[in-house]
Length: 329
Image (cartoon, rainbow, N blue to C red; front, side, top):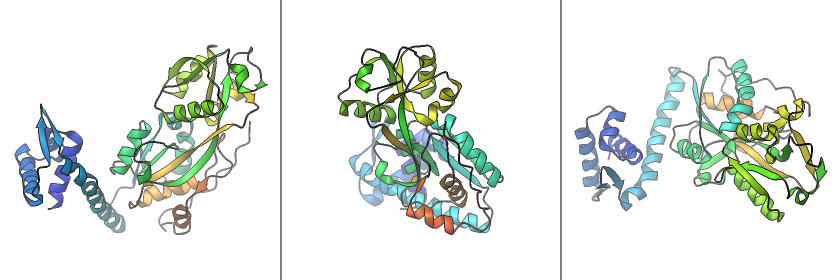
């Protein structure tokens, strides 16, 4: 078993097609087929079977896949560490983010990071929570920032920094009370998140706990669309406070202060558990650990591993200055 065979196997598991695997790895289909055949001979078990035009992993291959992926990532992390020591690697951070966070929070974080580390490039990719976890655990991302996930693969992440936040009731309608119990809002239409999102799970669970059954008129998969519908007078929603501060300040939306204990959640900055964290990614973690954002908790929580890195920062990376604490609206 060698790393070329492992790389071909892991890539095939992702693409389910030998031709596409060959194109991705810049090899011929025959070379890929030979590597996989040699791996099957060594393991004395078939790894895939043909279903129509696609290839499907056998049960044995599904058992092997996470270990093969981990082995490949550790090999690449070893090379990464060596390149950093040699000073030959271009400083880049591959950061994944949820769409709402990328609009409302990332610009400020990345502005602070650029000011402190102008030589480090940040490549940002956005996607769903499931997509972020998958790409982080597969090594396609160095870091991911997302609403606290309740999704498969969460146990394979290490939380580096976390910000607490409140999910608030908001509306543009003047007919809605400014302060009330949530049950007083049963007659009003609600605009909520599309089923399957992390915020939808948190909000629906919270309402169920309060035995509140809103009259849901619409569901959308992003914050900006919901805010636009609210401004058009379409009803009430529950949104992260950090996502609506601008609208609350300019008066286009207003808070409904409920008498029940509020719904709270958190945003996390995470890495793959047990993975090597490159120096540029450590620098971004350091910046995040010192950052404050309107609508998030006063003090970000950091893990023990992150706290240690803050005292053992790489000497070639400048210390990120503390960001000024924003004033509450």
